[in-house]
Picture (cartoon, rainbow, N blue to C red):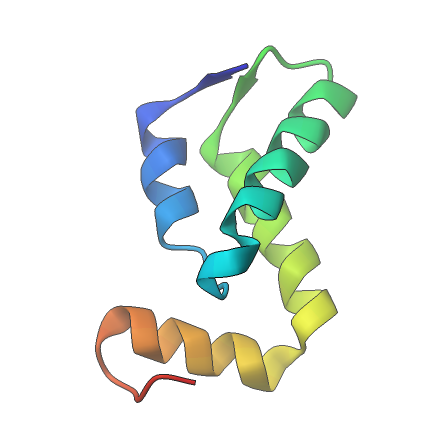
Length: 75
C-alpha cells in the first residue's frame, strides 16, 4: 500500500508507545482499504489516532502527546 509523505510524518507523531507503532500502521492500511483507497492519507492517520486514543484513554494519550512534543516526561 502506498503512503503519502504527510501520512508517514503524521504516523511518526502518533501518541503511541513505540511497540504499538507497527500495529497502528497495519490499522491505518486496514482503514484505507475499507474506504476503498489504495493509499494511506493524513485523514486515515487521524482516524487511526482516534481509535487508539479511545483504546488507551484520554489521560495516557495526553501524556504521550506531551512527551512527543518535548513538554512532558516519559510516560
